Image (cartoon, rainbow, N blue to C red; front, side):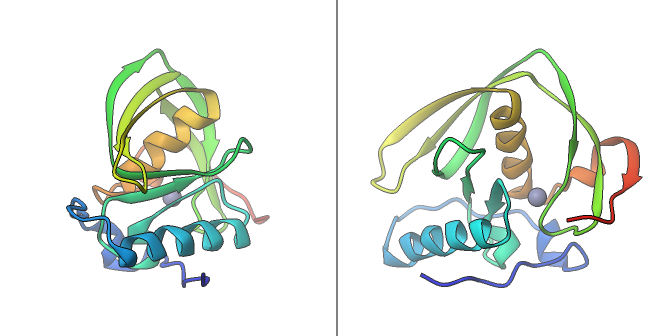
Length: 153
Ligand code: ZN
């Protein structure tokens, strides 16, 4: 495993659309391992592959209940609404309020290529939306409804 460099929002790669993963090979498994290590070392709760410079549809999330690895995640259902301050490892020092669904249901593949379904509320629902948007080149700053700068990490 290795920690990879986190791309910052000035990097155009973060605005590109990531490609679907058609084969879960060693390269993809290493990518998932490295993404988790990179996320934990940066004290993040989520990381998407384009944030480490790879335009593939993979995300890792850990909101405190264990690591979730998602390949080709798609949000298939949303309900309700919640507003929370969000931040992003690619945009250090910035946070702002974003409105998200309170509940989301997502489908993806796990590292064994098995289809998984995740139903989430609260912070996990936020993380699923935030990370999945990274795969389409969308950043949380595009959705901010109330901007503020936070000098702390
Ligand atoms: Zn982010």
